[in-house]
Amino acid sequence: AQSVTQPDIHITVSEGASLELRCNYSYGATPYLFWYVQSPGQGLQLLLKYFSGDTLVQGIKGFEAEFKRSQSSFNLRKPSVHWSDAAEYFCAVVAPNAGGTSYGKLTFGQGTILTVHP
Amino acid sequence: GAGVSQSPSNKVTEKGKDVELRCDPISGHTALYWYRQSLGQGLEFLIYFQGNSAPDKSGLPSDRFSAERTGGSVSTLTIQRTQQEDSAVYLCASSRDRDREYEQYFGPGTRLTVT
Image (cartoon, rainbow over all chains, first blue to last red; front, side, top):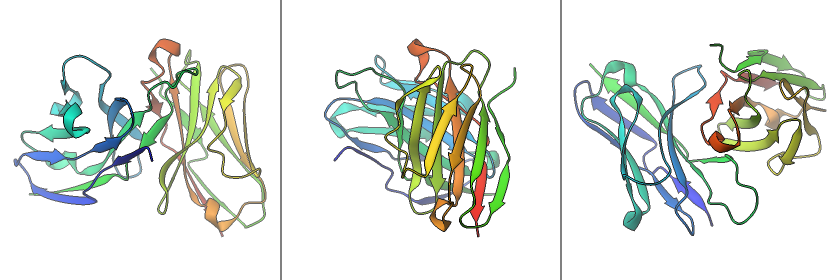
């Protein structure tokens, strides 16, 4: 079945430490890939996206993600975490066009809650 | 400029009542999406609008759910005869045009509680 998996439900890091959030997808072809962040009581904000080309993509707030086709992964990274990064992070995909009209219907992973210790 | 807005921000209703949730997309955005976020199911797609038509309603969980969009702008999601399992945060998103439909901007959501 087509799916998006975020293996880590909850991650805790110390402020200033590096961060990697994992995302794996299961689709027949490479989907379009996204990372969103949701702060408490807020809507979703797009951090970055991958459609094609360079497999290392840069996003807002100092985040980056690397697409690895061989591993069906799109992991999110940040070299040094700030306390304000505490939030829930969602990996999402737009399934490849199966011949119908393509549009941006998102399928989300389960989310990873990030806690940052001072 | 203004982002996607949703109203009300919170809604508490009794089981069996009807509710209407409103979404105002970013001006000029032709695509509009509704999603639902609940503890048990995570984030789920409900319906997609391109202009005023809805080519994909596949995520609506039952016939108690309906949505419309008028003037290519405001959208209303209606839930009839609400049930406790309808309790969730309902999120609306919009995107600019067909070429950039993948870049969705989300509203803050409406938290629906059915008692």
